[in-house]
Every structure is written in structure tokens, then in C-alpha cells.
Length: 479
Image (tube, rainbow, N blue to C red; front, side, top):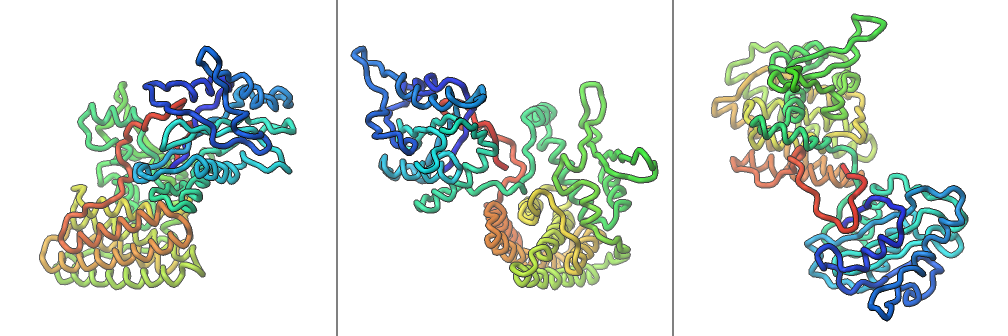
């Protein structure tokens, strides 16, 4: 189940006529009220009456809903709030009565702050049903005492409240609230331009992959910028206006991605991902340490390095389980270091080809990210993981049988680390990331077993058209 918040309006009567009307494709069947604000009286008295001409008279219901608005203190121009609660396809086989729908609507609206009790008269609202799988809610945003309820951040609040309702009623499909760790979806204009130019990915997505690789292989900004240029990325540094020697930011571009005038299209680190700004990368790297010297190109040394990295990954998984409750910041720093190690390993095993290990690394990176792009201070364990990441990156491509076997063993240890991370995210109630961790663990186990993963989470998938929603559009989009 999910709740969609539609565009706000200023005409209660027009919205009611649409909801009780035939719909755009005669899809509105048997429209009726199922719930209303506390103190509204019997629903039969509120139901729009059918006139002798066969049409409904909405004037009485419209006047009741608009009454607080007319008497309010400077009411907003758009005071009509409209939302719909809809069952997912997995739950549409269930027959839900009007009384059950009414109970679910009241619980959702109470948690959001629209439905209140008679001792605290709030907004006036009604819920109507004209289909088996959804209901509509219409409310006016002026309280009985004349104050305006602006309903800020209404969509995230509705998603969270609807998730709680779906859990109480044991519905199969439950959409968790947004956790602000997903990548920003590419703009439709970016997707269209990529298709016209024959690109498999948008420049923003391709740059994000290359920057992530450079971050995982670097221990300082000098190594980071050198790695970007070596990967064929155009780099533009932003310097302080008071000290020209001080670098305060960066932007990157692909050589082939240009504007109509021929200028490169640059993206700042923060536009690629919230944790890719230069200050956050500096905090992520911690105190720069000298990278491992890499004459280690023999097969024996490569195998030994993979085994060493596997031991570190196993210790990191135990560290996450131990620190999950007592030191979540420490577990978070370890998770980010593990994401860097998996990124370097994906390039060592698959090169630039975006294979199953690359896709698993992208999903793992989603579950390792902290809320709102925060970066935790590095710990000894996270620095150890990053040292292994740089070591794997410096060794180059894996080609022999022995080092491939050792690398697959490392992949299996990282899958166990993903399992530990899933438990951490569940305990933190960050359910999108827990689902990503579960998918990453399954994909890594399939890679370790020599099979093709079939389940991954598309982090940067091409956006598909949103399903049609009756009566308006959504005003916000969850991430």
C-alpha cells in the first residue's frame, strides 16, 4: 500500500464532482463515503444527495468542508489537500470492507496530523471510495479555530504512516519511508540525450562510477585527482577566493559529453552523490597514509594479498555485529571501508566491463551509505579496509586461476559482511538499505559460486513513467 499526495487546489466542489463522477474512462463505480472528520455526524447525512434530474448535489458537503476556510484568519489560496491510498498488486485480491478502509484511513490521517479528536478539533476531511483497491481523502487546510495547517513534508509523513498501517493490517507490500541514501535519479532530459547519443548510461552515472573507483583507490586528494585524470575524466578544481593554493571543491566531466556550444558538462561531487564532496572525502580518507608500494605483481603475492583482505573482511563483519548496538558510528565507518574494498575488487576482476560484481558493488554502496550523506570519522578497522582496497587496486587485473580462487573467497567473505550489514540496518529501521544489503549478499554469493546473479537493486535505473493517478499528480517524490 502507498499513499500519493496530489496537487493542491482551491475548488472543493470541482474535486468532489470529479471523484463522484464517471472518471476519465468510466472507472468510478459505486462512489460512497467511508469516513469523515470527527463530529461530522452520520455519513448518510454527508453523502451528496441525488437530485430528481439524476445528478448529485455537492453544495451541502462543499459548504461544510469550506466553512473553516471562510471563517479563517488569512487562509491560503490553495487550501484543498487531496491524497489517495492504494493497495499494491499483491494485495488487490483481498476483499477489504468499507469499515476496514475507514479504520486504515483514520489511522494514517491521525499519524499525519489531519485527523484529530473532538477535544482537539482540527481539519475537516472526508474519505470516499469508488474502487476496490483505493480510497481518496479530501481535506481543507484550515482548522476549526481558524489556524492554517500548512502540511509541510506531507508526502514523507504519509509514506511513513501508510507503512505503519500496512504492517498493522498484515498487507504484503509495504513501502518503507525514505531514508535519503539513494542516488538522485537522472533527469529525463539527461536520459533522452544519452539515448540520442547512443550512450548506455547518462554522463552523471558514468562519472559516479569512475569517481567511486578513484575514491576507493586513493588515500589523499592528490592521488584522487591523479586517478580521475588517469581514468580519462576532465577535472576542474575550485580554489578559495582568498587563498589560490587552497582547493575547496572539484567538478568532473566526460570528454565526449558536451553542450550544444561544445563546452564540457561538469558535475560537482555533491551532484554525483551526497558523500562525494571534497570535504567529506577528506574526512573519509582520514590522515593520509602512504599507499602500498606495488611491485607485488607475482601470482603468489596477489593470492597472499587476497587472503589478507579476506581475513580483514571477516574481522570487519564480526566488528559490525559487535559494534551495531554500542558503537553504530564505528560500524558505519567499517561499512564504508568495505564498500571501497568491493569497488576495487570489482575492477580487479571485471575491469571496466559492468559485470555482475560491479552491479553488486553499486548495491552494496547504497547499503553502506549513511543518512543525509554524513561521513563518520575513520577508525582503525575502516582504515585497514581502505588499505586493502588500495592494495587490490594497485595490483591490477586478476587473471590466473589461483588468484581468481582467492578473489572469489574474498567475495564470499564480503557477502557475509553484507549479511551483518543487513542486520545492522534492520536494527536501525533503515529498511531500504536492509533490502539492498540482502540483495547484495545474494548477488555476491552467486558470483562466488560462479553463477550469474539474478536479483539486484537498480540504483540508477532509467526512470520509467509514473503510473497514472486519478484527480491530479503527486507533488513530491520519495528517495
